[in-house]
Structure formats: C-alpha cells, structure tokens
Image (cartoon, rainbow, N blue to C red; front, side, top):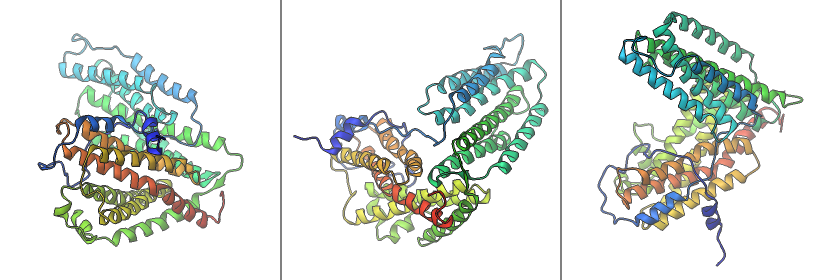
Length: 452
C-alpha cells in the first residue's frame, strides 16, 4: 500500500517543542468524565510522533565569535569567585545557601548556551548565563568584599542610559520588508527584555538588605547588558549585510497604527462582557453542551490568542515598538481567522467527541501537515516562519497532557484536551501565510511598494 502524506509526516516528525499541559480557560480537565478510556499504548504513540523543530531564528547572520564572547563573559564572572563560601568567610548559612544555588544555576545556564538549537536562541540565552553568573559574583563580593547596593544601582543607571541611546539611534533600515520586520521585532524584544530586567529587579526580588540582594541587582544589570549587546549585534549584522538600505520607519509606524485600528474594530464585533462564555454563546453554541467537547478549548484557545494579539499591538504602540506591533497584528488576525474557521467546523459537527486514539492521531498529523505546508509557503517566508515558532508550541502542550500525572493512562480528558491543542495548531498554521500577506501587503501599500 502506498504511503500517504500523513504517513510521511509521521515518519519525519522529530523531537518536538517541550510544553506544559494546561488550558487557557474553562479547564475541561476538572470534571470527571463518563467517556470510555482510550487505548493508552495508542495514545503514547501519538505523543511519540513528536513535532517538527521550530527553533527561534532571525534573518541576520549571528557571528559565532559574538556568542563565544558572551560565554567568555559569563565564565569570567563565574571564575572570579569560588564554587562555595566557607563558614569562616560568611557565617550566615542563608547567604551561603543562596550563593550555592546561584553558582549552580550559573554553571547550568552557561552549559545550556552551547546546545541551543539555533544561533539566535543561543544569543537570547546569553542573558541568562551572564545574569546568573553576575548573581553569584555579586552575592560573593557583597558578602566578602565591599560591593554595595548603591554601587550596583549606579551601574543600572548607566545601562539605562545606554538603552535609551540605542533606541534613539535605531531606525527601521532594511532591504526587504518581510526580512526587516522580523529582524527589528527581534531587536525590540531584546531591548524590551533589557528594560524589564532592570524594572523587575525591585518589584520581584527574593531578597532584601543582604548580600544576595546585591547579587540579584547585579544579575539584572548584567542581563540587561547582555540583551542590549544582543540587540546591537542583530541590528548591526543585519545592516552590514545590506548594500543600499531603505528607511521603513514611516511605513512601519503608519501601518502598525492602521492595523491596530482594524483589529480593534474586529475585536469589538464580539461581545465585550467579561469571560469567554458570551463570545461562544454569540456564535450560537450552548456552553454547557460544549463542556465535554474538544470544540470548547479549540474556540477558547483561538479567541484568547486573538485578544492577546490585540493587546500586544496596543502596548507596543505606546512604546513606539512598531515591528512588535506589526507582528502582534499578525498574531491577532491569524487567530481571528482561525476562530472563525473553528466556528464553521464545529457547526458542521467536528470536534464534538474523541471516539478513539486514531482520532487524536489524525488531529496531530493534521497539525503537522498544516505546519509543514505553511513553512513551505515562500511568499513571505520570514514573517510566516516567525509566527509558526509560536504556533508550533501548541503541539508540545497537547503532548503534555499525556505526560501529566493528573491523568491516568487512557483518560479521555487528556485525549480531548490534546486533540483541542492539535486542532488549534492546525487552524492557526493554515491561516498564517494569509495573515502574512495581509500585514505585508498593507505595509507595501503604505510604503508605495518600496523594498518589494
């Protein structure tokens, strides 16, 4: 018998994205089920199909020498302090324990940067390795030496000034809008991470008035430096690869503002009451009837991502992060379309129940097929692939239900929840290339076709 496309996808599916199980809302796993148990072995085979790898990437050449300098910086910080504190040096056991934890975390984070799936993931991971090493060094130097909180806060202000200077100097220069959009969204996210590191140091600290507190602050400062270094590297390497850059700053800003209004108007077409039940009911469904169906979580997941994308756009525009706003508009529109597709499918009788493990397998293979089809679409490859990185995580979430100790082997609730995650992946992936065309088509119209 000839192999079908789904058989091929099943054989090609590799080690996938690890995800934690969990519903966005209306957790269908909380009530007992009267459905018959499914074949546990067959469900394990569904999980073992894995998923295609979608490591985060950026369409700019990341230099290995840059990554090695970042690792060397982390090693330098860690090597400047001993692996343990002696009771003679530091009588306070709580401080010694905090230091031991920080040192172990730093060593682990540093090791992890060498095994990331892509250079960009390694670049992003440097902030954890450098920050954790700074946590250890700051704790030790404050406990044994003369490093003070005031010293570190002075460093933080210096880094803030560097961030502001970088933001003022950065414009959306590029060649192709598809490529430029993904590059500058990555740059904006790295800069936003630097700002968060500094802002969160005071709000979410574990320690107060102690050597570990100084370590926490130095962690935040070093993490921010690493993120800013990464943002600068991505921007500069991208610009160095372009012979005659075009300034997309005006078109990015105008398009982001325009799409923000469009998606906000589309969200306003749905009920605005608190909770998701009114939205589901407005589509003609009985929420009680949906309670034990995969359909419920499919509707919830797609609509929640729609709303989340709208909020991302609003927040990004407030801080002039126009590339982030455009990617957020893409997320919102993708999942709005996926929600409408899901409504249509459910009204046609799909996703009412899970009859067998084979149905779950088919749902997962449908998701894998949709991801591969979207990845193969070459019309706007950079934005489409950027979106698929986030969407592919849904498969990991679905697989996570079969690993969750909350469910017994063969529990139909685990299968139901997993199937909903796989279906969400399929619907969103199928709409991704169209949403990319919508965003970049609007951008092309705004810029008069420059760069296309």
